[in-house]
Length: 320
Image 1: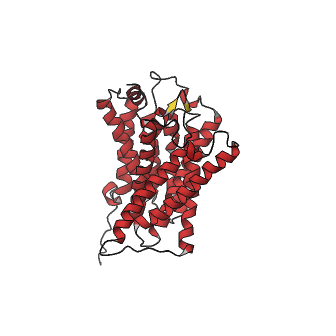
Image 2: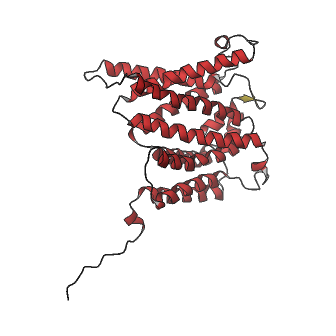
Image 3: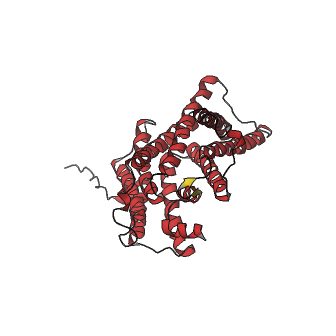
């Protein structure tokens, strides 16, 4: 029942909701560094299983095994390691609504890195669409003054906002670099995932070991308390983080980061709309205004220019 109340009040994405629900009195009863480790282990297990099936099929998958190629997967593993831990640390300073609003910064930062790293040119209309998407998702999440104090958005400590901005930048950087890796050759998606998540497991394990040394092993080695404080909600956080990572890798291989950003934003808006009927959440003018802005942004980015703007007709040259 308490979980439903939280969902009714927040109306935001599942990551922030589940992570907050896993807290007790504003604190984590478990070591939150174990969440990314188990999520990486889950993704590695799933990818390894499907790679094993591919290897036993009639057409074996393509796998580049040279170290100069494999070592590139170290980079996103480090970025994801830092991002996942920054994400949990941010939610200890700010409420989930504020976290979700700050997370919209990754829409714009993704577009910037999409251009700088992948050298993908975007038209002025597409840049306007990306900015509109960020404005639309933010508008849909802003509470009215009747629901909460008007200054509640700016009541968190400065550390929370700095960590939130860092989280958005790291998320965009990790996504863009992962897309670069996934598309640089025609290797099997599952082989690429196995490389990515193997390093992910190793780095997250190293982070846990570092935490033990830093604490002087007061609580014992990390593997003896790996599941301490875990609940059903905590396991849902692990499954959500792991399954989302697998879906994102598919998008990075066969689509691009901008499609991922639009998919995530539209899914979030759909969740908010469904929560009106499923959890009796009060509909707000901000939500419907945000939906309209996001729909306009979607059309501006993906529709051909000639369908949005009436281009001048070239008059035929007539001879005198």
